Amino acid sequence: MFKNADGVRQWGSEKFALAVRPNPGLFGRMKWTWTGLRTWAVLGLLAGWIGCMTVPETGRRQFNLMSSGEEMQLGFSEFDKMKKQVPLNKDPKLNAMVERVGKRIAAVASPSMPEAQWEFVVFESKDANAFCLPGGKVGVYTGIFPITQTEEGLATVIGHEVAHAVARHGGERMSTAMALNVIGTLGGAAAAKSRYAELFNQLYAPVTQVGVALPHSRGQESEADRIGLLYMARAGYRPEAAVEFWQRFGEYNRRQGNQTPWFLRTHPLDDARVAELKQRMPEARAQFKAQ
Image (cartoon, rainbow, N blue to C red; front, side):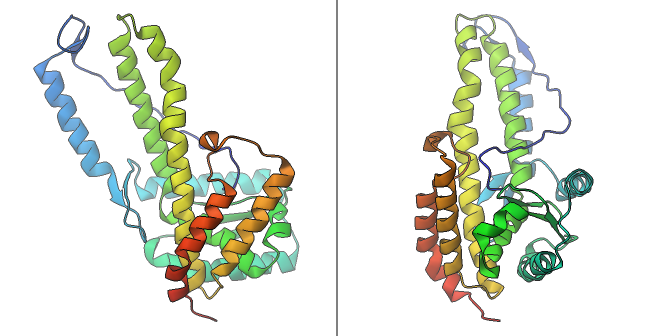
């Protein structure tokens, strides 16, 4: 999505137990038993083995504890809710364009998401936004069309959003959030009886947000830009149109008066985004196939 708010929903919760004994020892005021150390070492290795996956196109290793099936079911459920709660646009030309562009992007993305059940819906909303939920459920808000302007601009948007789904960024964000929650719980327990307890409780959330969650989100956005650029090129849309779209989107953001400092943003700065896309252009041009 293009908004600076992630809107990520967390489903369910897990309880974790740690075999520790509150005694002064080597690790401050918490003494870890040998059994506890072995247990958490095994669990850590298991989580790393199960949770590490490779992102298509970029080859980046990611931490994701969710299965693709779980992600798809959540995507289907949320999309059904949205179609009941958000008005649907009835303009046949707009819907036909989104369907046409969406299918071309889906055709080149499907090898990396073969189980997707593609669906393309235009929602009536002033928000300049779009999304692709796991499983290939694509939504485009009418507020984005004044910025996309052309089918190539729309291909930029849909390519970017489909890239998020293919790279399984939603499940990765949820897994990271769960991991940070566990670390915070364990750290809080370890610090509870020390003089650093209050300091830990005050700093853990903001430090992990600025130092981990937000940079991770910006990294995902850049990755989606890169993958989306390749998808639109393979689908027969000029990759240069992506630069043109993001320049228009940057101007839109400036008119909205967004002055959020870069380190507090969930998305890259618009100028940095355009510069990175220009650097990626030779790779995309090499895969461009006019249709």
